[in-house]
Length: 112
Image (cartoon, rainbow, N blue to C red):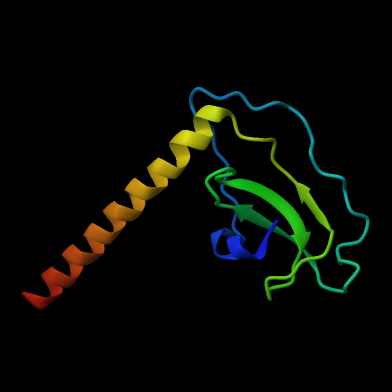
């Protein structure tokens, strides 16, 4: 986990099924006994939105300054290869459509 991906994380995880992929019924969490990191910050759940792990949830130190401790664990299993290719492209399309909708609303408001 590096600090250059800090803008890619979201604290609200989204779960769903992706066609063409099977999720293994496997637990990836270690189950920390304490909900605080050794540095005193809370352990938080985040979602990685990098191209290699789109939508994959993990738990780790809640520091917000870009640094992190060695407290880190994946919650979700690795994505299948097809998801790693498809999800970033779908997110780009959604973002482009949302931008067009916002531009349309601005035009609509300025013409009324």
